[in-house]
Length: 549
Image 1 (tube, helix red, strand yellow):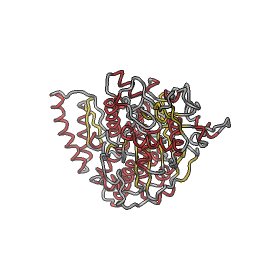
Image 2 (tube, rainbow, N blue to C red; image 1 turned 90 degrees about the horizontal axis):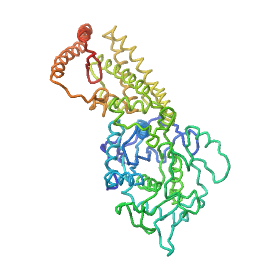
Image 3 (cartoon, one colour; image 1 turned 30 degrees about the vertical axis):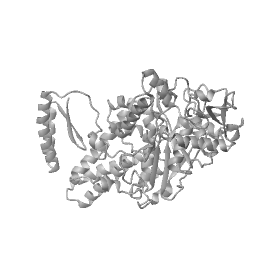
Image 4 (cartoon, rainbow, N blue to C red; image 1 turned 90 degrees about the vertical axis):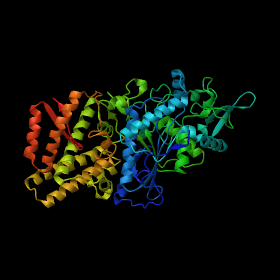
């Protein structure tokens, strides 16, 4: 496997270029973000003017993605899109963990090659990201492509006196290497777990955001790596940097190193890959809330112990819950992305996943999807009506070219307030209400150029705000997927259905021409005639669709 997968789109909104001029919006001066380490919202200042480096922990590709996985991807996609809208060049790295105990064990149980299983599910994750409009990362490195980086990093930790090798009776390396927590006095600074019995109220407050956030041991959310339970450790807190293979591990899942044959511990890969692609220190390290401890605490410690600066800011998205319980496969409450998309459009699912601020727990329910569908109906109805009134839509280039400084102030204020998506969404619907009022005025005064200009300005603002959240219905992937992102009932079209489709389509085309000519009486007559025949018409951004009552 290679070191990385290239992103699908090399335009400047995805792949930064030193040749592209930077025009950071004035709105960027007001950006405030939460930092897990400080437990405070503070003003964001990039390490390099005009540039932002972000590393987000990606999937362990052991099985199919579920809604809990994709919530984190959508949350950080929105964060990234806001930085882009503010005018920053963003380097966004999201890794793939393609080797670990679960992958090896599940592959063995299924009679698969471990790397084949990992790649199969990596493709499933990629498909889910693409379907839900998550921008491809600048680079997507796999753990297996960075063994030399990990080995070099471990050697630096050993040379600096913050790790130790386990040897056998003959003094030969066994393949087990551990981080020496006692040698690193800063351990615990991310989650405020001090090396004393001192109580940290700030950490306790963060823990109350959800169950067992920082607990270890018998914690169903943070299972202990078997290597971390070894009797060879000097201290119970020490964690594996490199570990000797199990007897059941296949030969192609072992690498030779100066400290013995084995494979990496879970935490070391992210330290190695973030440094590989973002250099000495970067702006933001992101991931799910359940990664705060032990994964990110250990990652911060080993990176700094190797002599490199850690991330300047740590951001964590909260869980998806079902009836108040964290959604996960181990609890049997996981909902696979394909199963959810079989019953709901992709736009609706993305809206539901991104409907609250990233730090808020997201309760997943049928009601959340109903509300998301209602939001789509309101959004698409306004955009479609405004487009008819104006005789066309603003181009995608015009929508994406809107600077953050030109967006409504209530939207900007919400996004700058630690990416408060709920407030930003409220701003969008405030604009839609204003737009609908203008459309009513325009219907009474068809020759009002001033009102038309206001409608167009509002339409452009609404679509630009939606685009910042990855929800402009006239952008990809929604356009290619159909009006609502394309949920399908899986039925096969019969000859009778095809004939009915042709007849009704002719009527819908006539209705569309009438509406374009502003002959709304004729358009309503066609709709009413079809309704009397038992046919329901739904108007969308890519046209009208029909269904039998």
